[in-house]
Image 1 (cartoon, rainbow, N blue to C red):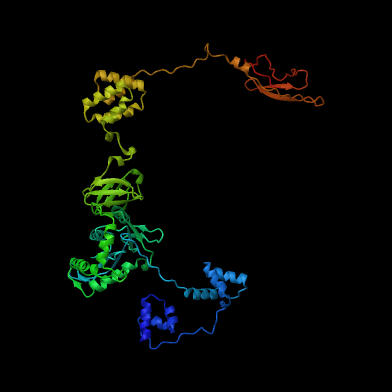
Image 2: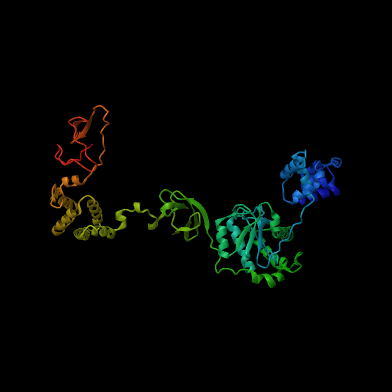
Length: 540
């Protein structure tokens, strides 16, 4: 019976089955059966390995020194093989290192914090409670414990979601009369989107809550409950002392029982670690160290991710709200309450704010419309008149008087007028507007007819000669071509070559013949004009 109790006790402490078998001297399968809840008939003796010393034993000092240096078993095996000629396997070194390291188990270090610096938060199981339908259910028991004085706050909720978590935290802050500087929480889904010991990703609503109250939320390392040991024992204390053996008719009655229990029992107990009364220690040192509460509670709102539709709106409860055009087809964060809808980008920068719209309606802000999608009619008559004034004074006069005479239909005429201005030269349009204004004709077809009947302006002809322009012969005389000699040696026989001169005429010249012109020196040219009537330099 003593062995069975020892196995159960060590299993509750989290020991491995291999370690329990080694410490108690029994077979590991026996421990496994008790771990599965089976009854072992008799304990088998453990297989002794005392007569088989490790091949690494002669190298114990070397292995211990390398362990002190922080080397791994793989590295130690490599060094033993190379430096000491060790012939054993890597597995033998690994078992030997594990055996040595197992005897060097270090004690846990207690972490104590100054007043108001930290509070630990966790959820447990509440007592049996009747819900609205009369069915028995066990709610979630929320608890916060101040790390310095051990004063706590407890509350039960049906759901362990973000909204319930924030409301419980807020009620705890008002119960304490202040806010601790740091909140150590578990990696619950309601608060932590992505668990990571070094860089956890918190729920955006949790981050907003922390900024509102000026505190910092730090999740613990995943699967490491000892990082928040104060609240782990606090949950067990609530379950065993306040709720065990109770059945409550409603959730409200259970919370009222917890409130009285905190005030009459938990706050007046002498804590086993501090050896002080919890309430007295809180009033003496921790109350004044807490951060002050803000003037208003954290606003109640819901949030969710939404994708921007092709029309530049996001859908929320059958209503549609516009966003800037650069977020088309992207996901944004939407927060809403009973009055407002706020839209944020991925960096949680606010990009739009709307009043809540009724179902089936669109809330579109003018600044969220792309400029290319705003028609001239939407821009208004004043915008169209300003563009007409840029054309000329008669255009401005005609459009203004036309709009006064025609009224609302004149806005469409203004659009047509601006389209006509892009097709007709400005002087022609100005003359047509002048004539139409004097005749008081306010229809666009009259203006088009006047533009068609306007005399066409002939194009300017270019002058071939002018007193200020020099003749081409003057520029030809200035030009110079480098002289290249094609004179062959005296011994070379007479040859001919063809030159293309004077607009493509083929002229023949014979080298070293009687008809060959005398060679020109560098920089000289033939002053006689060519057949084409222009002064050209003679090619050698």
